[in-house]
Length: 494
Image 1 (tube, rainbow, N blue to C red):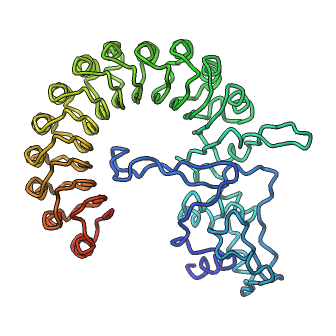
Image 2 (image 1 turned 90 degrees about the vertical axis):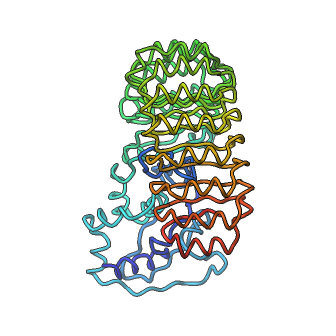
Image 3 (image 1 turned 60 degrees about the vertical axis):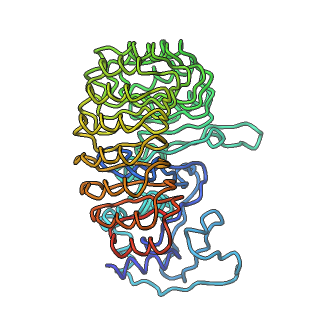
């Protein structure tokens, strides 16, 4: 079977699955790949969600490439857009023929056996599936089953939503191929109210089948937001990023109790009253992410016991006006939080962290990055009270020293620790971490005082899976070679 699969890829002028790793080239869209599962959803050195360009948005009128009949020699010229995935660029030798052995009838039958394909095609990445779906009708039929696309989010830009007609008019693209694959999440970029209405009218699953919508850099207004949330009855997750045309009044008129996850970032009209709308209208909210420079302590007072039982994730990014007083209101209203981010909340001090540690004992993930007032005292509070904590992010906490790492070394539950650009951490402090046997991920990127000798002691962490040493002066070529020998199971990021 393995030889047969290899021969199929030769006939298709493709690499084997282990070699097919580059992203395919977009026609009308992109796909956001889900993050690696790790129990916390974000505990990875390479945080963020990668995007792989592909042909998800190919028009249904475009016929896929069909394999030639067995009687003909095989010759496949790679389309210019997908040359990197389909092997060498044949355009440099337009008259060159590539001949392969003619498959036997049994081999041909096996290549089109839907039961075999149904098991084989699981081994390919999303980008590879987008290419393989164009091989022939049989392969597309198998690959267009929704189970092959679970967790994939198509990304559509406004210019890709329309086809240009000969007379200069435009028509909305056919989204039937999306419906066949059962996509339940979409990211729409640069869209207007009209574009969203067209999407709802043209996507067969929009009314009850779409669970998640992300709008980025779009001109959606209060009216468009109200229509979208009214029409899309299955919507549970909503993200608004860089949308500056809706107002807080639009949130009051459109937010629906069905929503369980809301993310709002870089929207200039969002302030305290937006949080009031969220607290009053979304009693089932389990996850709230908010980046808003004008949100103050007053907003934290709007949280009530209604959110206390349901909300387990709160991310407050770059909310510069929030102080320890806001933290008081937040910890008493949301006692069941398991994930909290105060990244960029630069007015939070050690006293605020003490409030968090004393009242949010269920926390598994805590992000205090870019909080310049945090010192070793805050780490003592964390080590003493947060016994369930698995992930701690302290990037750019410039006042943390070796003493603070000594406190953290007592935390047996900690699995992921980020210390990027903690400029006072030295070799002596690093030694405290050598006994943390449950640590799986450690980032020391940009720590200028760590030496090669100090870093070499990390080989004592034999269960370490990811180690980031980017911009570390002490991370030399000899050290990386040393790690490759003594930490063979650890991915070291240079």
